Length: 371
Ligand SMILES: *Cc1c(COP(=O)(O)O)cnc(C)c1O
Image: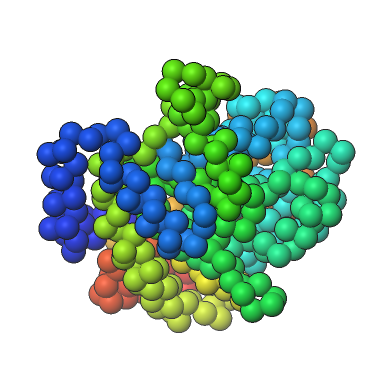
């Protein structure tokens, strides 16, 4: 699904030099590389505060802790996402409230949000799934009307923009109170291990986040609240500093691969190509087709026989997972989510796909669906 080796070889000298520098300095924890990457990312995102942390799941968790959310508070999010988004809601004793998604964008449906709001609702967590923004203008409008926090899960969409009706734009993850991202190796801005970050424009929330990721400590050995230990390694920061410079060019390569796929599959009666939401520029974390009347497992097996991986993101919606069996949800509650889980398939998507690979993939998919 990804080709991290070829991508590394393209930038090897600079990556190796940065890694060696960290090792030579022995500043493994919170070294200058972390601060330097943090500042670069603040500039890139045009956001006041970036707080690096250990992974995207932690980013989501510390965000909810920093906003002071309490057990019993209801948090609205989607069932069609990676579990991390909702896992941390439950872990903190908060109550996840699922809503359905839009069948075209796969992102949270603002009308469904409004129907799910109760007096206990405290926050909305939109996920910018597969690389394009959720409808932030509608979400922020609802949040404003009901006085709710918005925590953006931008783990799959770093670098994509949201275009407001007034013509302005912002990077995803910098529109709500807090944005979260992951630097997991296969993410659009991936490091060589685990990593994550939280973004905010708010000075007070930023201070709280910095304390929480550091054992609840502003002054060494004086603990103001219960926090966690969540840091970005200096080595990972040194790698990310190089890769951030290439992020826009990487997104462009992903878009070119997506354009190739689109051309091959557009108009096919059994394949629906990814909808391009006009208020965002897709950075194609995934290229996800919706299939119609095909044996999806058969397609995966056929592609596997041609050495082409194809993945289902995500085969079981969260509300139907064993982990949430005690929640109030049942099969049939979220028809769009459930239909997508049964019909989507994602093709290889990364920065190193060449014409030969793309041609092999598209031909193989069409061979199967046309027979
Ligand atoms: C990857 C991902 C996460 C979690 O990130 P980790 O760094 O793996 O903890 C959370 N939400 C979404 C939507 C993701 O894709």
